[in-house]
Image (cartoon, one colour):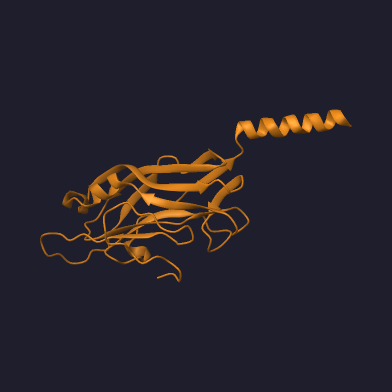
Length: 192
């Protein structure tokens, strides 16, 4: 486990954690019949992995598709927070995971090869104090992208993961803010 990371959660409910904690959500699921542990895989894709939002307090949902390629007993969706490019000072946070995803994952039909989920996956929030810019690295390295992936059967090694999908959020100043700044510059120039 990464130092400072949250302990895995065992409840299939929406998860909201403190701002500074790395999100790790575990969803243990048991099959009715006894089975051995599989090196499970899935294909994960995001519909719009690079989103743009106005500065200020925002809720940004990422949706996508998960295609299960091997049977599994339990699964974890792991999403890194996204940090402002070139710094560790500002980040947008993973706030919660979609209830519809939990509902799907809690059905036995989702545990078998060929199962597909399509819909909301996770929410990222900015709190209003986050400056404009591109939020796209994961906080471990300025050159490592913020990513989402799944791992299966309690094994986070690459052999038991889905593919990693990079995501980003670009915060841009609101048009009203830009108009006020432009008007201020115009007035300052006229005074000279």
